[in-house]
Amino acid sequence: AQSVTQLDSQVPVFEEAPVELRCNYSSSVSVYLFWYVQYPNQGLQLLLKYLSGSTLVKGINGFEAEFNKSQTSFHLRKPSVHISDTAEYFCAVSPVKAAGNKLTFGGGTRVLVKP
Amino acid sequence: DTGVSQDPRHKITKRGQNVTFRCDPISEHNRLYWYRQTLGQGPEFLTYFQNEAQLEKSRLLSDRFSAERPKGSFSTLEIQRTEQGDSAMYLCASSSSLGTDYGYTFGSGTRLTVV
Image 1: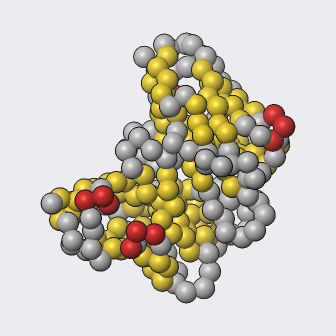
Image 2: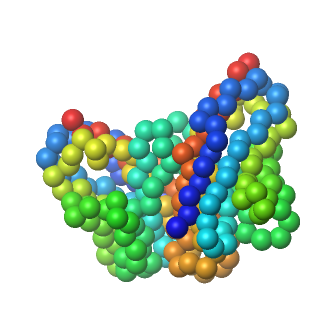
């Protein structure tokens, strides 16, 4: 079984400042890693994913994340946020060798960008 | 293709009533997933289909819940004898088992309120 912990439930940040959202996971098997964003009353949109290869992954809207296997972490960063980045962000994992690509999500981090 | 569609967007029902939700996946996707998201939490896996076969069900899916995907196209999720604890956002997602991008597309969800 897998579990995902997002260490911050809320992150307030000023516009144009950098932001980092922390994600740690636990799994007895190798996993793929994902970050999703959810705007109010909407479904989830994929920001980026790590499947293999370079541990630094770039996604949409200027986000990037770094996979650290030894620390079982996959932290999300953006160097300069916009008001439109106000949303909830979810880290998720999926076992590599398992049928169905079932996702296990963390509890989410709510980002509030202030002008 | 307009993505994953869910209907209705909102549903208010009295405790004890039955409700049914519909999901129309992306047409070329053969996998379809249902997740449940309660307020302030990340989505939790409920069940998934590959074509018309229901391949996995979570322990969260009590006997009051049933899902179908006739002919491998749209899917329905029915909740019988609703309880207040069933109040949540029900998210549908689809993906393809072909290829290796492991990308899900989520719908906008159906928000259920049981009063």
